[in-house]
Structure formats: structure tokens, C-alpha cells
Length: 379
Image (cartoon, rainbow, N blue to C red; front, side, top):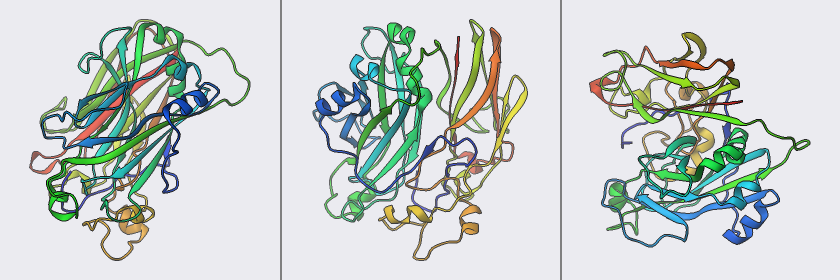
């Protein structure tokens, strides 16, 4: 994302599955402590202030903690252990904490599951990826407080995936953590950042508990449809000049209680870009409209405190709710909503997901909408 003014996406009240909590650091327990806690429910730390680097530069050779693989400067993965998976309850939250290093702009970031064939070496290209949380970093000056921001995602459905016996028998499950940042502006603007290529520190905790009487969970059926696929109306669309994307999935068996888990955010920071314009999004399944939503519309004032670097969004005076609603697709320092779409029972065979954003312009053929969606149900 770019310097100029940004349009901000916020959590939609409809079907939002993530929320932001207090401005505070994540807990400080060691891996051994948190993994032991996870065996009885509790908090398991997967990444502990892992350091990201310039996303455009050659991959650095700095050492990484045991069990973590650096896929690129902007992405790390770590395999979840059997103890961590078996210790999960049916209630699951994911807390991500970002701490400023030498990137002082708002960046798009995410956490995902990466499913790799059992006992095979990790391969980013062949793994099955499911995005389970997306967020936008604030404009942060590492020399000012607060210098970190937390994001909390409610992901109970992911607990069912992680605990499913068949999936665990066939796949090793990794947690994937990505922040694509660049340090070029901070190299000039932030004291102590000259010549550095580190961007952000990141921490991820899984927080688990059990609600109600434990029961035998139905077997999970899982179908990834799209993972961070950038759609628009000029080079990734079904129809040139229109923002429309269809994805067909073949279900080998009937699926009960099927749901779609959908994440989108609008980007394009050029003048008149899609970050500045709120558009209606239409979701169809098997040619039946299932959801209409317009991202954003909420006030970004609650995130002013964590935007410690001067920027073109906040300025010196608070804005009214109406002013924010006129352009805000998302807020720097906020999570992107996870929209849950109930489909009910589905028959075996072909089914089609479609998203349309008919009013999107993508001025000067710039901008994109990263689309992540997967189908989850029961046998």
C-alpha cells in the first residue's frame, strides 16, 4: 500500500467473526509453558515476536527459532504439534500482536492454515491454504508509544478442522503468518531505521477452551475455493470490464450444514482508487444470491491511538462517524471481517461460488480485491 490517503475497511456488523481488543502486549510465556497449558486448554504461542523483513528484497539469512521455516521475508510457517492439536477445545480464538520495527505504513497481513501431505516436506506451492484471519497494520513510529497493536479473531470452526481425525491422518497442519512490509520510507523518516530492512515483529497465540458438554464431533468436509487471489475488472475477472469471479467446486459426497468463510478487502491507493470508494459486494452460490455487503462504514477514531506515525488519514482533528463512513473501507490497526455464509445441506457434484462488485472502477487499471473463501461442512 502506498503513501497518500487510504480508504479503510472495517468489521461489518453482519456476520463478523473477528474483533479487536485492548491495546496491550500478548502474554510472555515460553513455548514449553504455553504448549503444556494447551494440553488442558489455554494459550499456545505459535510465533513469538518473529521478525519480518523487506518483502521486495532477497530473502535474508538471519536465524529463525526452532521449528519455524522462513518461506520469504514476508512469510513464516510452523507445524502444529500433535499435543497442540489434541489439546484444543471447541472454542478457539487467535490473538495476533504486531510490534513496530522499521515500516511506518499500513500493510495488509494475514494468518492461514497450510495443509501438507502427511510426513512430506513443506512445499508452499503444493500446500492447501486457508486464510483464517486478515488485518491491516497501523502507521507506527517505533519510537513512540503504543508501539504494538493486538487483533483477536473468533475461529471456533477452525478448531473443528484442527481436531478432525481424518484431516490429521492425511495432513500435517502448519500455521502460516504473513506481513508484506517495506522499510524505505522509515529508512528516511524514523530515527534508528537508516539502513535497516526489518519491518514488523509478529506474535500469534491460539487461545482454546471448552464450552458445554464435550461431544463426538462430526467428520469435517473441507474445500478451499480461493486463497488470496487478487480479483479486479482488468486482468483477473470472468468478464473484461466487470468485477466478477466464479469458482466451481466438485463435492465428492453430500455435505451437511455447509458454510462459506469469506474474506475480502478493497485496495488501490491511487487517486480515485478502490480504497477510497465503498462498493456493494454480491455473493452467489449456485446462482442464488446469498449475501450483499458494503465493506467499511464504521468510525476509525478508536484506532487513532495506535497510528503514531503522521499520515494522510487521521490528520490533527477527529472526524465524525459520517465522515469516516463516506470513504472508510478499513481502518489501519483493525481486523478485516470474516463473513460466514450458511448454505445448508449440499448434494454431491458441482457447485459454483460467485462474487460480483459491479460498481468497482479500478481507475487506471490499478488496485485489487484479495479473495479468500473456503467451504466447510460435515459428513
